[in-house]
Image (cartoon, rainbow, N blue to C red; front, side, top):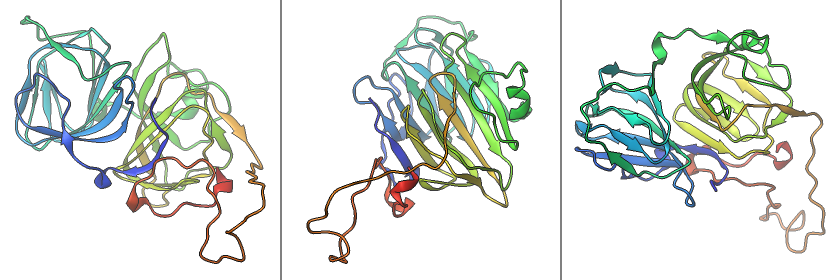
Amino acid sequence: MRPHVELVDERDLLWHMAELPHGKGDARQRNLSYDEENGAASTLVEFQSDWYRSAGSHAAQTEWYVLSGSLKIGDRDLGKGGYWCAIPGETTPSIKVVAGSRVLVFREHGNWEFMPEDTSVETSAITIVDSQAMEWYDIMDAHNGSPMDFERGGTPVPGLYIKLLWRDPKTGFYTRLIKAKPGWREHPLAHHPVFEEAYCLDGEFDYNYGQMTEGQYFFRPAGVRHGDFTAGEKEGCTWILRCDGDLVDWYTDNARVEMKGDPVNWGDEYPESEPPVHIQPVRSRSIGPWRDPSYQ
């Protein structure tokens, strides 16, 4: 399974050879999070040259989101904010990527395997979206029963806006953009029955694990409490966010974590010592020190 990652800055991470078999060109990737059991992963891929791959199918549910640069998938041109998703076994058209492009690549339910197909078909039923051309939906409208109504549990705080990129109607798995208006706040701690991951596209955001800014990422397994959210006062914040099912908010007020026991060689008599940390996820070096663990 994937570890709890919160927070990491992609600029702290090592480059690896991109896991894009059968492609022609040079590309490298940073692993934001990785499941060593089944190959599912969230990665940032940088194309160092023009890159091409013919049509074929993936072993995993595969999603690409363009951070910068451009690509062509089949007969569709996608720039910044472009997105596509293919479920396992679904034919993905040929792809051409311009050198210098940066793309978030997500895999679920499988590894990097790709099977080229001997076909001239350049169109497919896969989901292809230009998010720049989409309208933002007020999350309050979604909660009140519009076609965007795919959340259950709790009442959302006004000031959030969404663009739904893809959703599996059977499982509820979804990928979407979320924008918080400047100064947006939500106080209760929350946990969910599904995993939640996000990459910050712009702005900043404070919560119990620290301050999240552009280029930073978390992967949070189901059941982990998080909260005390405050978006930046100037820009707010925008993320790409994914969950592996319908997002149910279970809220907690007056949360407290108690760590009982008698210190032996740490505590007030040992000024250089530190207390143990409760629930410590993976964290990269530039994020900074941990906050009071009682917030968790």
